Image 1 (tube, one colour):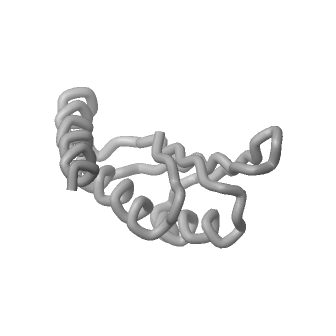
Image 2 (cartoon, one colour):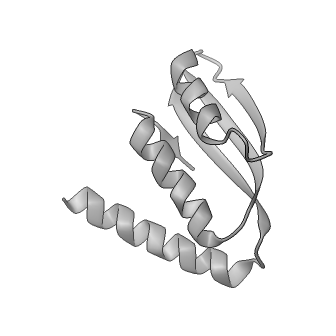
Length: 97
């Protein structure tokens, strides 16, 4: 329960910061770190499928993790948050940066 509160506070703060700092729609840069797994990377790619986003991946030097970067035009701060939540719900072990 405490983690849910922390996540909610984080997303509320991020949404406010995005609303104040940008005009929307705007380009947004997502960055995720996942355990190196083709299935996990594919899940993230599927979540951003049909968004027109540019997706790049890079393996860590030890090969245990992969960073996934997505540059995509988003409509609003709410849409940015929705994608973060979708990835967090669907991809186990993901770290959102």
